Length: 345
Image 1 (cartoon, rainbow, N blue to C red):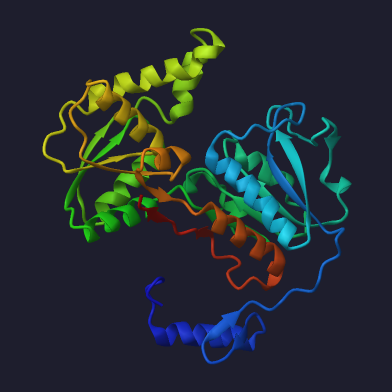
Image 2 (cartoon, rainbow, N blue to C red):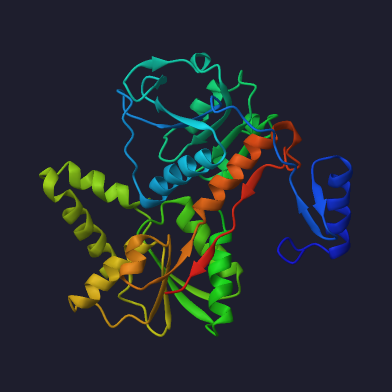
């Protein structure tokens, strides 16, 4: 009840209603569970749909995306379901399997559910329209600004949208974490402030109660902008190096006026790593306490406290929706926010 900010009485009444509807079962006095699902045939299939190249190749673009795929396969194996990875080429609007064959959704008659990742899709509403005739449950990882989703899709029966990285909640949680540690003000640093996720994190930090001073640049929206520029202006083997140099140049410019803040909050771990490099190079002053977002491998190498978006729970909740289908008690409630936490190192 504390987590969802409702009274204990209201929470108990809600659980009792769901118990009477058969959507929950109870063990003992206060332990509630979803009913066990019928044992599935090993032939049961779940489609895992991601963006792909025109020949069906999928390239994970980040650790979080790779974790998403890995957790999906691990969870599918635990639940005795076969996962089939199916690509979607936005340019042609075609579904393509791993062998480069063009497919239709009707080619998968044993499918009992669909998991869709919209990460790095330029027009995710396009692919959603292709699923309108589908009757099986669909769980969608909406890796875009929440307001960019067409309202026509939000409350469709058997559909559920999950969000973990966009919105203000990550900033709010990180801000509360810092307040509990006794900090009262901080500097927020982002060279990607053209993005909604960077602006949302800043707003969340402010709403947490921290005094936040923003040091941002709004020309670019993500690290990929710098990599795209680098890919057009030099050899491929040095793209990453030249992209980093571009980011460092902007970082040095935007942080030169930071004065008394005793906490620096980069918009993600990549920025934190670049700041550490600049510090080691003697290009910037000594950095105070640093805490960021992503909880990537780099954060462990840097021993950097960082906000974890809880991808494992995201995948787990997506599978729950597929299992429950029309019996999902939270169906039609819009986005489902996956709560993360700061991992201290």
